Length: 268
Image (tube, rainbow, N blue to C red; front, top):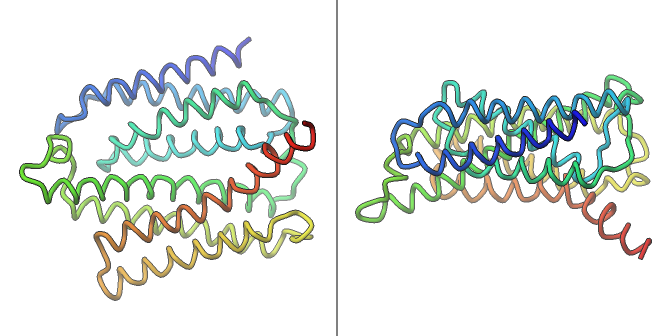
């Protein structure tokens, strides 16, 4: 079956690319073939999702399928950013996650909830939510890498991996660029959600909304603090990770509880 072949090709390409990045990670100039494989992986992943969408006339926003879609978008955004920004080494964390989420989506297929049933406004909310989470996911990983870099630069001498990274100022600038872009899409998502989602309480969306707003406040405050007070370093890292954890709970906390835990208890 073509979907199985595409999923297998994508997963194997993700993992092979990861292995090659690990092999060359201490080099200041990363060879390009790990990223050619990553492009093959993400395009195969995209093709798999597209064929499933066409065959089912819709997309299942179940826990694993949503995770697979977001992982694919995160990798795609990373590869696009890597064309002119030094973020390619984040693939060592992102590619295995994308392979795992695709494998889980293939093995735990769920009923389809068709996106075409929604109007353009609701589709805008769904798509901007996914893009916002994907961008802020990359920002969180960038913050973790920045924390490792700061810690290692304090040691004498730092490890070769850290020496192969761009300068600290460049890494921080990239982090805030990702945060600003992610915040833009998160703002659109929240505004469209308030305008177009009905029966907020009945749909178990209150906690998701509250957590998303808290994350928005944290990211907005961090960007304002950067602009007005020059916040950087550990302050930027800590608040980026706190904001992302809130967003992670908002996006996946309810799905985990409602679809996996409570569903198992009701059917157990």
